[in-house]
Length: 350
Image 1: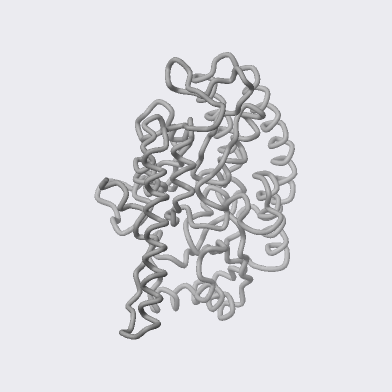
Image 2: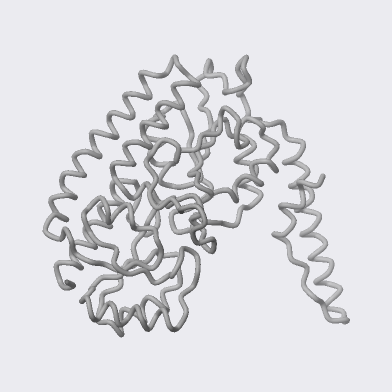
C-alpha cells in the first residue's frame, strides 16, 4: 500500500475555522478523499495492461494483434510522441506524459497518467536524468513491463550523441548532471530518434519491421526536405551571437552555426543573481547581442527586463511539439523556431 502515497499529495487538506461552514468544508474534503481512495484502489487492482478486448502475447510483452487492436506506447515528451506516431503508424496508440508547454525536468503527474502507464506496453524515455521523475510513477502503476531496466523501457538518449557531459568534479549545482538532455532540437537527432524507435519496435515485433521501416523512411524523407529549407534560411546568420534563458538551445545553435554567447541561468536550473543579470546586460550591450530565446514555461520577467535594458528582442519559443498554438508536430515546431529566429536575426544583433 505504500506506493499509493505517491498519489495522495494531489489532495491538500485546508485549515478550517471552527464554525458551521467549516463542518461543511470538512465533509466536502472527506468526500474528495473517499473518491481519491476509490480511484487509487481501482488503479491498484486493475490488471496491468487491462484494456477491453485485448490480451497479452505468450511473452507477456504485447497486446495480441489478432483482432486488430492497437498497443499503447507512452513517451515522456510530446516530441517523441509525434515521431513515434510517424514510425508506428496504425499499429499503436501513442501518448505522452508531458504536454509541449511543460518543463520536462519535472511535471505534476495525475491519477490519469498512472492509469495510462498501467495500460502501456512500451515506454520511451528521454534519459540523462531529465525524466527520472517518471520512474516513481511507473512503479506506482505496477506495470513491470515498462519499469526502468525492463525490456520494454527504452532510453532514447543512448541512441544519440550527447554534448556538454560534465567533467569529473565539475559543477554539481545543475540539473544537467549527465549532459545536455535537449537533444531533439538538433534535427539530425530527430532522425536518430526515429531510427531508435524503429529499431526498438522491430525488436519486439519483428513481423511488423517493414511497416516500421516505412514509417521511419517517410518521416526521415519529410525531415530531410525541411532541413534543406531551414539551412537555407539560417545560412546568412552563421556565426551570429544569441542569448538564451536555459541551456535548452545548444543543440539548435550548434546545428545552425550560431553562437550561444550568453545564458541568463548561471547553471541549468539555477536562478540568476542580481550581479549575474547586471553583467549579462553589460555583455549584451557590449557584444551587440540582439536576440534572447526563452521557453514558454519559464517566467519571462527576468528575460524581458534583460531584453529591454540591453536593447535586445525576446523570443518566447516552444522547445517541444504543442509548446505554442500551431506547433502541432515536430517539423511544424522546428519551422516556427527557425522562422522566428531568422526574422529576429535579420532585424538586428551582431
